[in-house]
Every structure is written in structure tokens, then in C-alpha cells.
Image (cartoon, rainbow, N blue to C red):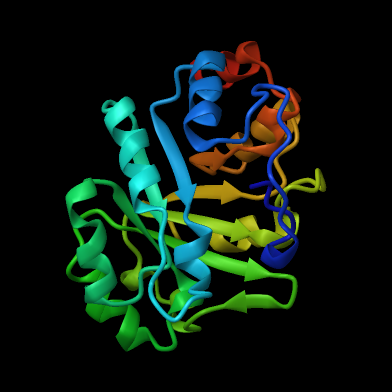
Length: 223
């Protein structure tokens, strides 16, 4: 799906200049044909939204991706908020992304994050602001090593990165790996993130629309 502004009810199948198909395995193949990425972020929207009475997921599809590309490290946000949901994904050996939006209290977050080795925290900012326990914004001792600043309002709309928010998150957060998600349009945005000491970025729209080239990626990684 093509995510736009975090308005999940309006997401449409992706239209990519890299792939004629929107089937997950085809899209992954096209991305890896374009560039030998070593990490792939996956958001299982069915699992995150919990639209059904049961915890419906795309587990089998994600398993197929991992089986097809065993050397690819998956960063997986499946809306996990309790140990029962975590158990479903245990055998996948993905790096689990814990989205702040799924937690009603800091205690709820800490009780789960303490059981996961090398989890990734996603600080989730929607059109109406941050969703999640307020303590996660100010108490860095609750952070794992890797933290995604997920500005969903900037996702999929070519609006540019949220410089003010990223700078605020970077303050007093030395020693953590911060990743920008939402708004990266081109090599200029990547260079700006690098100058801000942001450790990486989640890319989707800019790749599928060929706004970033393989030469751009090589340049930013080899500088």
C-alpha cells in the first residue's frame, strides 16, 4: 500500500516506477534489483489497526519475504502491544518495532520492551500530534538503541522532512541511533539529515518515484 499522511483508511495499492506489480514479493524484488539494501521496514497494517475482532496479520506474506531473502534484516511493525501478540512473531527473527501509538501507558510499554532483545522504538506523530506515552518523548532511559521518528503527516506526500521535530529529538539524545521516517524527497534531504546527525532514514515514495538514484545512495553512504 502507498501510505499517505497516516490516513490509513485512504491508503491505495502502490503505483511504483520500480515495479509493475503491487504484490509484496514483487515489490521487494524490485527494490533489491534497484539497490542491494540490507534492511527492509515492514508495517503490517492489518495487525497495526486491529480492524477485526481477531488479531489478523500478514504473517505468512512476511514469512515468504524472509524465506526468499534470508540475508535481509526485517524491521517489523505489527502493532505489537502485549506478550501474546509478540509470541506470534517470535519465530520470524525480525527486529521488532514497537510503535508508541499502541501503548496507553509507560508501564505497558516497559513491561513489553524489557522482554525483547534489540527492539526498535517508533515515536509516532500523526496529523493531530504525538500518540503514545508522554514519558517516551522526554525520558531517554526508556529508549532502545534504535529510535524511529515517525512523522506520519509527512509520509507519502513529498512535503519534506520535519526539521524542527528531528532537531528537538536529537537534543540530549547522544548515543542513540535516530532514523527519520516521512518526507524524504531527494538527495538534498538525505544530505540535510546527515548534517543534522540523523543516523538513517526510511525511504519509500522517493524510491518508487525514482526521485533518488543508486548514485545518490552510494554517495551518501560513502561520504
